[in-house]
Image (cartoon, rainbow, N blue to C red; front, top):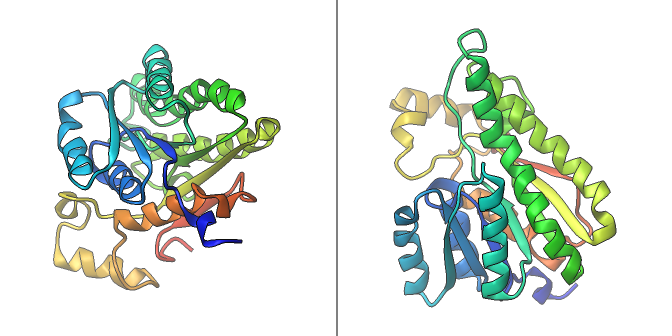
Length: 254
């Protein structure tokens, strides 16, 4: 295995939900490594700062406004990417989100909304990119799930159910789409401190220290921890890895 096998230079990478948080870090990180990056948000104005930052260091970027919950917009985004760059090498399904409610508080409509936002749209994106991958002889997909999809998280029942679905979908796609030379893997982040979210996730020094004490790695997780795993999975060095879920929690969830 050569060092070049660990490169994503000139790879075309689509990152959904890339206007903030982990998605933003993924888009900028891949661009810094020489990938051609497609960034996405429901609101185009949210993409401008990321696009400007990527272009500031000579990165190649395409901004696409699209709601991943709407099939026609998902298909249009994939087609725009292919028309602009000529191919797609890697799709990272990062878009999603939730709100905290116990299941006895959550309405059927609320449950449906969370599942649609975290599971359905992953399937929509995978389905939209598959014909492109098939035509070009293969490709890679990384689905961003959560440790909430592995371990019970009171107050996040719908979110956890959807993220568990993402993990199982990843495994099934890896088997069904192997014939197309498509590799499908999953990342399950634990508590990751994104920009501006520290005061929400660890609002007090006591809470922050408690999380650190519970984490064998001895620190809080940051978006770059997710980026590093995705960079590996996006390279030829991971050509024998498919159907896997990598938990990134500093050991806190084991």
